[in-house]
Length: 263
Image (cartoon, rainbow, N blue to C red; front, side, top):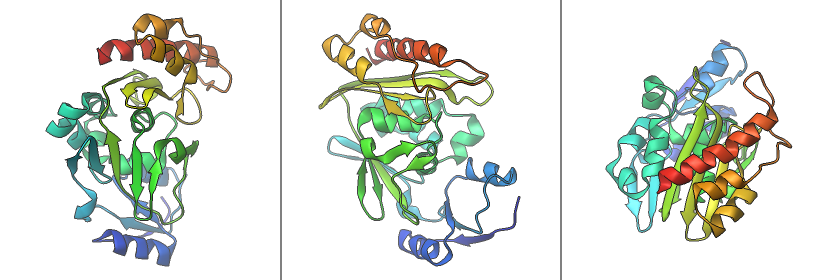
């Protein structure tokens, strides 16, 4: 690990000021960034610790939305009575992230800012049509994810919370890599007020919506309808875990399982 300076912020305003002054990176749960630093894949000169900012934590119900603070841990989302009652699919997704240490240290804001191609939370955010709130603006899920480890966040911009609309029904199913628990393919399916949304993670360089599945499930929200969709392998990942064709097949399979789980 390269040397770095650690600064602690006690408010969003002070964190933004420190990031502006130093050009550093915000540190949330550290489950991705610290690991990258240990491998010398990341070399931030300054880290701004967000863990002491109380306003970034907590879960609350606001009308027909569930709002989750950016520094809320995965384990807290999984255990939340509000989340379990309003969006049980989101609680189940959080409960399946990584291992116990990661769930107790990792945060929703950190996961979204990192935007790992195989992470679970991006599928929920995109699948539910959530909004990512920052210290500067509100960003719709469809505009937030730009590519591999790339988001719409500007330098120094801090995620403060995520606002999830409560769906009519939703579920997430993933085919996990056994060691990391990241998704080889994960599919989040939701019936929302604006129609059916299907978000896929792990299959490509970034999370994406699968239009063929959305169209099929809008007509017939059944596992059979999902299974009949032949997803194109074009642009999907090829690695030691599977070919693009294998992942394309898994997208339909995981979508069908998610539909069954949604009820």
